[in-house]
Image 1 (tube, one colour):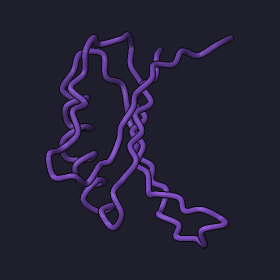
Image 2: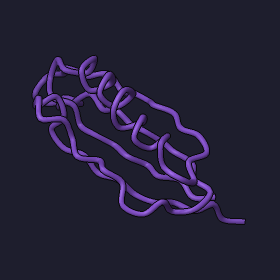
Image 3: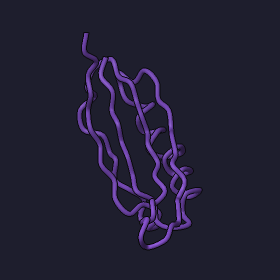
Length: 95
């Protein structure tokens, strides 16, 4: 079993849009691929803080489990600027 961890930093005030796209488009694409086992979406809300403390942008994460690596996945962010930056990594379980 391998796991795909996809994380995106969300533009300010756009968390609902980013979550909707992640569920309806990105996760839907994954579910259609051979080897898909399961997936979950997680969010981290935006934290607005003082300049000394710094701010934390909202984030959305899609965690998918696979019977094997499915090859290239289309993880191109939407063109509506709701996602500032996105990255993905493959993980494997260790005994």
